[in-house]
Image (cartoon, rainbow, N blue to C red; front, side, top):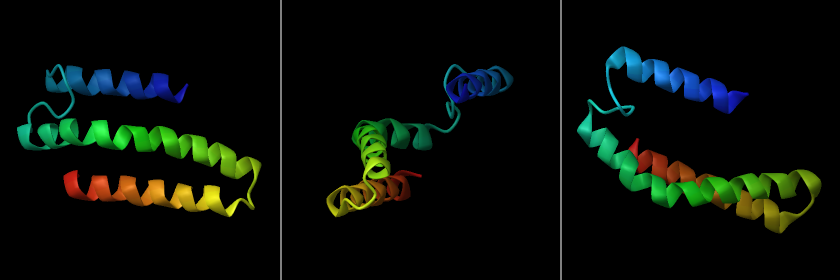
Length: 82
């Protein structure tokens, strides 16, 4: 449901701004995001798996540590590229 709503809103924004891609009008930010995503996306997938494992076994220190590392990695990538 949430993915459907996100897609709907994204399409509406593109329509209103008369753009084919989000942030098309800001080349610097668009390029930054395009460069960042291939590095950050795997961390998102790993984080989702680690969240699942952490919720199944809250006492697993190794999983919780790995989860914190993914959070730090994503935050670092976001900080450097916006």
